[in-house]
Image (tube, rainbow, N blue to C red):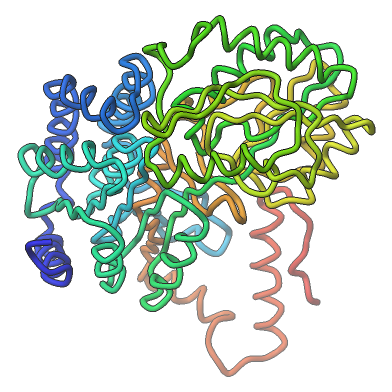
Length: 481
């Protein structure tokens, strides 16, 4: 860090105080520049992501570049509407007044990215911060070295350096940033680091958005096409070599479905990646030796039956798509979020009730998946579980639907983003009251508002407040007399 964290934040705060970032023209110009960067430098982004994670061109395009470009386009198109004050409904006591809700930029934002989608998870929230009118410090993950270096080179060339700064580095640089006072912090990563981020934010009462993860479960019920299930499961699980926060983490199914589902998944691995996935241009690698060693350790500890998958290769950080069946709840594979290309299948003899009991015994996941054509099973999951998202008959795909909020609950995070929700994550919705100052308005106020109080004034208050409720078709909840 050539310039101290405190100086960087102070400089951004000075720029924000000038009002430059509040201009819609400035916001549009920066969003356009961000879009241009992704288009003009596409080849370099493809190269960086291949070097970091061996991501294929299609995966990079779909899950990194095109997703961010779509977010930018949506925010640009809706910016005038998003930034405009809205008028909430009036109540009885505000009929003579003006009401508004004004979106305001929070100020200087800190965005801490993650290594598994090192472009998307930096630029998508940055687009929202810019659209909302903020200055921002961007901290890419040092684990995805090539992507971080490319962002550090390109962002200053395309964006206003007085308003957006990039800080590279590891733990020390992140700690220095967290010592500063920001107006909002957006963090993507593990729950362990999230606790550190939240503790640092609490010193300044800084609001945080935490996008975490967890063991996202899958339930497969009778009556569903197992070939369809296996295709969608294998696609979502083995994308980015399993290094996706909403990847299916484990599968629950009735015992008689376990073997046919495992066989179908093994067939899909061959269909998607060939007999030797190592040679497939569409299959990625583990990001670092540390992550590889963690996954290899889990593979060596499990006592479950392997259905498909070969030996890991540390020299290439290669772990093949791997499926285990007849996994027990206390197995090593169930101890933590896998975050790799390993899929355990657990039999549940008690059907949906046992599955939900097992799911609810753990932390609330970022995503919960259920493959079923049974409406009663769907209702059980809707009514009896809690998760960041609930998806029926597919996996992962909901993250690409920008009209749905994306975020966790409890251990899987707080706050949400994507589409208009990204704008809202970096905005404060300020209440504005334009109070009528006429003599008539003051005469009405004098009937019940000012001391000295008496039973008559209390009656007026009770009537006025209850009228506000009954105007909405509610009950007379405020009536005291």
